[in-house]
Image 1 (cartoon, helix red, strand yellow):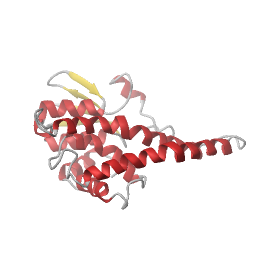
Image 2 (image 1 turned 135 degrees about the vertical axis):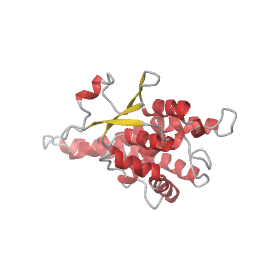
Image 3 (image 1 turned 30 degrees about the vertical axis):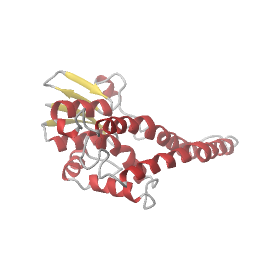
Image 4 (image 1 turned 120 degrees about the horizontal axis):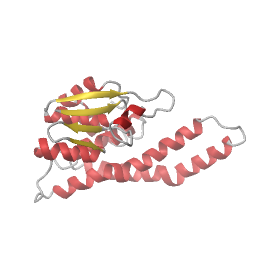
Length: 223
């Protein structure tokens, strides 16, 4: 039995989708973010020292594992090898690339964008706010926004030629890429100007396994 330690509105929702696609028995332990800080509760540190989600525990192997990419690789390797191209396939390194691209290239500037957006709304002394706003706007305009635009353009071009991130077959890379793309759609960063990416997100969100995962996972603002 797989136990998923699941935090609302987090990357762990994509693990529920994966578990539903695989069709294995699993259970969910639910955790709620703090209403003010939006941080995970202390209880998650009892599962993993960093206190973050997702984390899975596998009764069959005795393994407890954190990090979305590692969890996806573990579940695919042990329970759904059909969701990963063979090592001699032309798609194998494409798979590896997108598995790392999600958190290595796409998420950092998106998180920076979110931080600077929240910074402009944060309470602060009136004489500091204009300076903070200026620094935030310049950083966004000169670095963060152009970087995100280039990354999403790259993804759009790839999806204009592929149904999924590894060609015509669903793979673990699609679960890994789902979270940042859903977040970008929810924030209006991905819209009709990126039609292939928008279609891609709507396509996986319409899958039965994804919908079943939403019902089981609870609150999730990105779908």
